[in-house]
Length: 609
Image 1 (cartoon, rainbow, N blue to C red):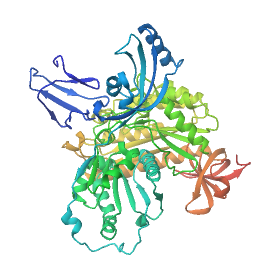
Image 2: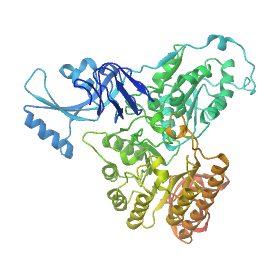
Image 3: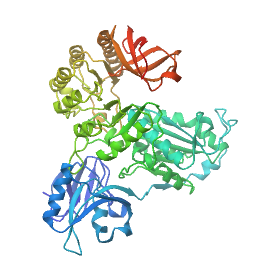
Image 4: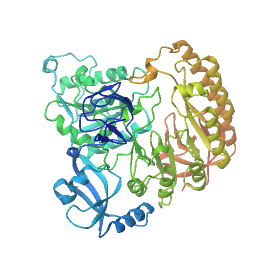
């Protein structure tokens, strides 16, 4: 056991005195990091303990200002009554807005040390009264790492190999290049808003932009090499226009850190996903002349500006950041950090804002959306969130992604069936149909547990579409185990499955295992699982033939300008003839007269609405 008097980090204790970290990232005295850590204490404690922080705990020195809500009452009994009433939603604390450290008065020490979004009661240090308070949000002082640029390399003239020396730079413009998942798309929208907030204008031609942001993904093998290759041609432009700013954001940036800066001296800024809405402030550090790396954990505050939405009718909205799962193949917990849920009130406010702007559909995002609210105090959950936003006038459709089979509940499924604005579409990855492989992946469920979830969905929402993810060739996977995956798919009949051959990722346990599956075997299994997916998807789409489906029109068909593309309630990509300028953002009834594995085709019937 750890000795008494140890300092607190999240829900774990770390002994004072000497210690070392094995297979993780050490603590710098200001913040606990979201890695699995083994702490070996050498003073009074001989035991070795594995520590897994559940949330970040920051030093009060990191906090620049807070948004505080509170009420002051006379007695502790009244404070307890207020605590209970706030938890039940019967009372609301007075929001004092953003306050600097010097404005907190006698509560300064307590408030600066408080974890945001946690309800607490505090006795007044100077009076007999009590406070019930909650730090709704916090803005941390940015302390990025400044790396001195290699002046020798920057002063050494290099010829342009890409013919970009003649491409004119347009001052005060930006372009964001996005790779990867929906979370990255949402982050790119937030970074775009930050750039526009500080005076930049979006430009379509990336070769003319004066600020180029590469929002990267590290989910696949060789992601780092792809990034280096992609930014190479843009690095050449910096020899012609030294004031061009090159930024690498996202998961590769978080994973590689300042190594990226050393390898590519033309880069100006490397920043993790947690800094998406602080890009403007980080660029101020860039203007000082050095390269900047911002990859340390930080509290993710609410956005200072409205995201620049790419879609005119579907809005991506983050509800929870980070991930606490430790799947042995996955790099996400190392690149996106620990879980940080937004409050229901903040999410509702953003949904109301996008609906006011004309959006009819929202997609709620989380790496593990079923974990929403478990880091808040009082705790919340995703079912409550859906009910909380469902009554917003003008909101037509609600989707969410991604669900985790370990945490998905029948209560949530029943709620989705009850709430008419929640679309009958579920994205629930199964990854493998074999229990031993799932255990080696540390997924926390069995194939039968997954079957039970799907059975519950189809019992309560018979027409629901079900999408999934699967990995083939995971270390040690045998042909017999792979066959169990195909068997699961044949039993369930998915609407679509996103498939991938396993690829080792940095700082993940499975990458170090010796029982790696040969590449040719992985390729063969990938081919077979894709064939299974195509067959099942076509079979599932048979039910739409002749039906009239409500379609939200999103864009023109890039292969046929005379057609538009939209999605049904079950998220089926649907094409039909029409003019995008008349139909974009409209709900249109479409009679389906032709089906393919991954799309539907039909004819408009009725009047758009």
